[in-house]
Structure formats: C-alpha cells, structure tokens
Length: 320
Image 1 (tube, rainbow, N blue to C red):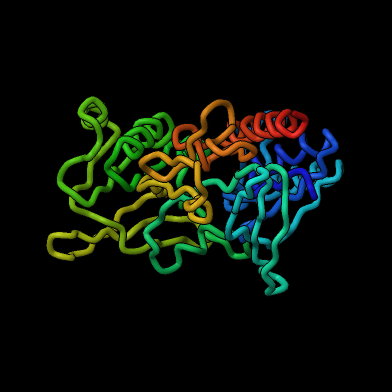
Image 2 (image 1 turned 30 degrees about the vertical axis):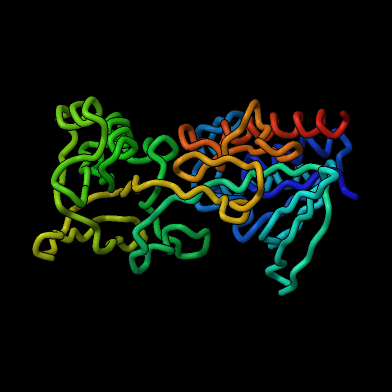
C-alpha cells in the first residue's frame, strides 16, 4: 500500500510532493483537471522568492513539477479525485477518474494531503474564458488577485467588481498603482463592514459605480483589455467604461465538494477546510494545505509553505 497521496497540483501540492519524495514516501500526486492550479492562468509572477526578474505562472508550475518528479513523485496527470473513504484501520481509499483514459480507478493510501485550492468566481460572460486559459491568442486584463497583479496596472484606470470586504480591500490596495479605481457593485450600497466602507468612500482615487454589473469585455488589437460594458440593473441600459484591468472580487469557491461527506472533516461557513492544528484536519492522517483551507492570504508562497508543513506532518504521522 502506498504511503501518501497528494490531491492538487498547485504550489501547495507540488511543495508537499517535493518534501514527501525527499523523505522517501514515494508520493502519488493527482493533478485534477487543471494541472498547475490557478498559477497556470497567471502571466508574470513577480512576488515568488528566487525570481528577481519574475517568472511566468505556467513556467513556475512546470519547474515545481520537475523538481517533485526528480525526487520520485509519481504525477498522475489528468486524474481527478472524486471521493475519499476511511476504513476502520485508518487507511484511505481514493477514487478518481482518469480524464485522459476515460476510466474510473481506486487505490488505498495510508495518508492524504488535500491541496485542491479554491476557484475564483467570475461572471460567466461570453469570452471570459479567453482571459483565463494559457492558450495562443489569450486575452489579458482580467484577474481575481490585486496582490498578485496590481503592480502591472500602474497609472491606468481599473475596475473592481464586488461590494464586500474583499472588494473594498482590493480597491484600496489598487490605488497604490492605478490612476483610478472604479468599484462596480450590483446594489446601491456596499456590503462591507462600516470601517471598510468609510475607507473606500473617503478615498479620492476610488469611484463607486452603483447598481451596475458587467455585460462584456472589449480588447484592443493586442488582445489587451481597453473597456467594459456596464449594465444598469435598474433599467438595463448599457454604457462603456474605459479601463485597462478588471479585478473580480465576488468570492472564491474552495474545491472541497469531493470530501463533503467524509466523516470527521470540518468546514467553515464558506466551505473551506478547517484544521485542528498545523495542517492536520479532524481526521487522523488527512491533511489540508493551501487555498483549500486559506481564505485570507491566497498567495503562492503561503500555499507552498503550508505544503511543506503538511508533508512534514504527514511524514511524522506515518512514522508514528
């Protein structure tokens, strides 16, 4: 029976794999549908240590994969885990679908690290996927992380979509770079906390756009965003807003649906996995790392750090 399965192929999953493989645990890593996680939809990454000139998101994930496999990680590409069950003896049965082969398979493991991340919510507008996939002809200018990408929008107008605390935090942060920040919200008042609302409404670089949502994106000849269509939800009238970037801040969905029925696992009110200490969940031998349990920081480096922690804790669990 293999010692360890790692579910997820973002910074948390691959970092866990590097540490576990170097500890001779021979981990098997299940990539899921989107190998490399959210960073494969990111262009330049400037805030990951060790790359002073920056690095493309897909290249960073490819390097992590190469480092993990160098030490013996078995990467099960295109394999999406569908269920986890725990036996009376404490071992786990993992069920997954091989998306390339079209088969369903199962195997047993002694410990599991869940590092499936979280998916940013978007509006589902026509052409939106062209901004979010790493393919030729990809469009640029739509993101869900101001901390990651805000510095690329210096001295240009941008829009933030949302009205909660996250949207307000993103808008305030972006005023360090953008010439103007439009805060587009479906309602006539913000849902954020009162102190956060006060900060946003007092900031001269932020302009609230009430009762509006996006109806479409417009790009220039270089496939870079140049404007959006606004739709007034009161009368459905449309207008054009000139912006060079759109930051979606309408929440994230943790990728935890496949473990909702695992006895002993706990989730917070937003569906994120809860841990009892370190990376250990309420189920012995089941660990959680990265954005699947972190709704606050959501950074590649924090996810990688938790991947390291989870691997060390899994190693100790298996040894004991």
